Image (cartoon, rainbow, N blue to C red; front, side, top):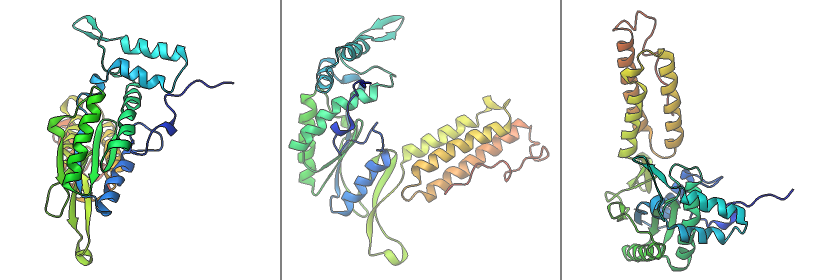
Length: 298
């Protein structure tokens, strides 16, 4: 049986693209930063595409798709999806830019369009580009190379009808005691090794300040007073599931101290929840911080 068209084949994407691709992950993208820093590229251009999912021109997006797909039925379906619009204030609004909001195909369509950026970068760019969807880092050997990379990136995106987000765009020198870089939830800083490895300097990483705040916010949601009528076992299970997922993502790098902070915070929130749930009688109800504590990290 003849198979339907794919959108697009994995072989079409370039190695600098990591987002929304099978067998490629955030950790693969993050490892490139470590490797390139170790090889001497310690100037980084950090940025992302402004309003990427809302700003992609429909006509240019369809042109990029038509480079790979000729099936008119598939193309007709995609055009219909792009023209569907969104409901606002009881009325349907249709734009000529943007991918379908909330649709599972939206990240794939954005990746197809940003593939044009990757191809142009291979010809005109400076440094090593690492792109996860619309988040970008370029690793460079010097400040001048990073400035050249910024100019090239700005020009390429302008040709595509896109632009960089000024508030998220900066050039960072990754040196000991110097600036730092946030990418995909990790904070990166060049540090000196400890104890017998003081002669070594490397790019360390741990959860960023924003990632830590999101974790605390999520733990507060799980242990919120509005859930007091639910069994404590359910709350503990939800908390364990969240912490397990968080630990699986951030276990790469130098995150032990941050794990301890989050686990301590989770235990405090859980103890407060249990006290409220049992009117302060949670110990006599057969629960303790030992039996109800969330899963151990690391």
